[in-house]
Length: 341
Image (cartoon, rainbow, N blue to C red; front, side, top):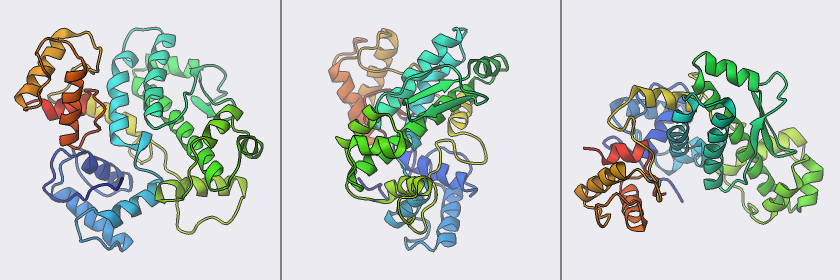
């Protein structure tokens, strides 16, 4: 679905957050990544549009600007999205900064990363300690697994750099998402079956077979970067002109997106410290407060009883959709910030 046009005056908007993040990654000064489209964001956007001769009205991010950004970044959804990064940080910050032993911590990070992969349609990726050589962690498409260097993980924890571990796990999960896109492209655009994909790339055969059941049949700006990467690496055919190699989830000179999100999480705001709530959650007092806020915002959760059931979930989804948030029914930091007075 095309992204909506955003312009000065849009407030607390997830598409504006994404635009701000990408402009910052390309070294355009946008100020805070806060979802508020003010004069600083407008000036950065006008500079980007001028540098790339984009046909949208100056200062409005519409279809042509989104297309140019997609061509540069590879995709704007999945693990690249601001929503995914925020959800992951919400779900992992407590565990990564706890006194749990490393195995327990990594298990929590792995579950959270795979939740984001599953939301993007990517098969589950085992994430565990093992021999990663001198690397912090490595995704290997052949067994379809992420291996984490335990010594480096522990060193980071002891040095107070838990955010580095959070970022690394997310970064390697992003590689899995990229490989899944490549496999689906080979199945659709190149008409390969699972065995052919495996023979060509050594991708895990089971994953290759799964990709053939969900092929990508037509190229677009979201898939061009994956095609480019594949053709550069495996030499299939000429590389499409003007398409940059895919950017990672942690692209940008200022550090990883997850690490930036952790900094913003720590800096606080009204939602800091709020639990991530979803259907079935057992914190009755926090759920009751959520239900009171939904009622206050005219999104009825049914009875204010501390039970996060289907009626409360439906109210959360309706509220999220009305505020430009991912309507997944999960109440993370962005949803709390929109709900709180």
